[in-house]
Image 1 (cartoon, helix red, strand yellow):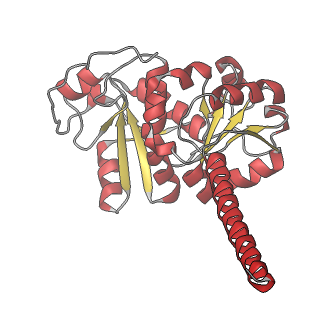
Image 2 (spheres, rainbow, N blue to C red):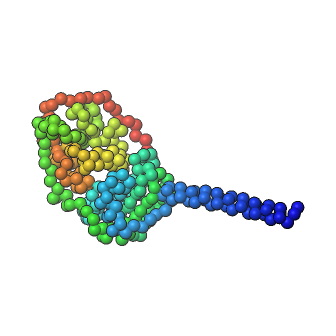
Image 3 (cartoon, rainbow, N blue to C red):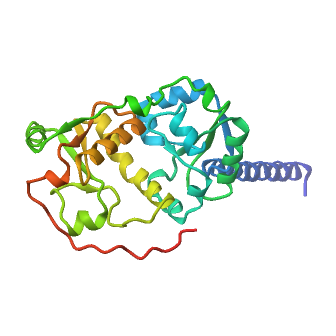
Length: 288
């Protein structure tokens, strides 16, 4: 073999090696990108940056799921953020949470008492594959948050609507979500207002953590509609007081102060049409 031919062969082999290296490196970069998308890392976020994202409604509604991981008493009585779900580590251990399609591929944000406890919570979440994207924890805890906060419960007021007022709003083109928080047996078997939604749903009452999670994911899309569309929610229960109380709870939790009402008189005073459906409580299987 001539020297020229040997040189040509060496150049060819070098070119092949470089091409192979680029392909492998490119695949490695792709794999690393996919790992990042699987949310295998806890990321600290500064208050100003989280607030900027929170106030971007498109980003908040489409891509952010925020959870307040402090003890419930502290979250209810102290400083807290609207449109955020109070939770604890037990909520993320129920099987239901792994099957929620709504938050798959989305970002999760955790708000706690301080940096260390929130980071620890995040690290516990990372051990499970929830199908979410990145998990952020608020650096400095709730005390550093300077964005919107919930008003004290005692200051939350709700206005009542009667059947005539509800019909008028519908005729004017407003979407009305009627949310009935009676037990499913009373709602389905006893009769409900046509088109109304039961707070528990046909899944029934599972108790505690399971119900709180199901309620959060069931009503999040509706509450987004209240903010973005010409829509209102009317809460009802056995009597007027219970409907009013539920309205105040949901107003404070969501931060939606002008789109939520209660039904005057409650279901005990309702004289309009009713629909009935046969319903039985599904068998409750332990989700632990």
